Length: 81
Image (cartoon, rainbow, N blue to C red; front, side):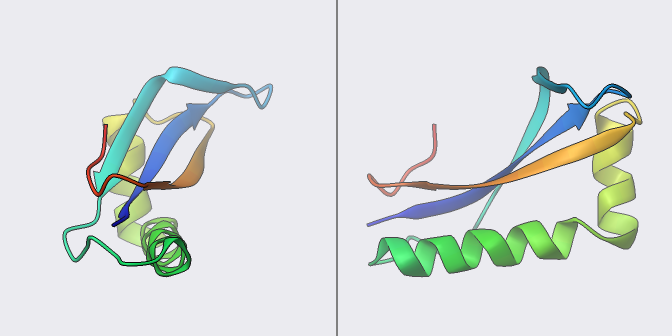
């Protein structure tokens, strides 16, 4: 079983990802039987939250950085760290 999530991290003006300033959004629909299905769902989450109001809300929680890096995550034990 696989669990899906997306890690959103602040990016500075010089394009450095600040891994100490991140937030994780976990999927509540899984777990998924295959890694491929998990990756599909994680990428859907990334896309849905990388535009418009959801992105503004994430940015405000990270202190309004210059940018945000969004990384899809799948874990193989069905739970997220």
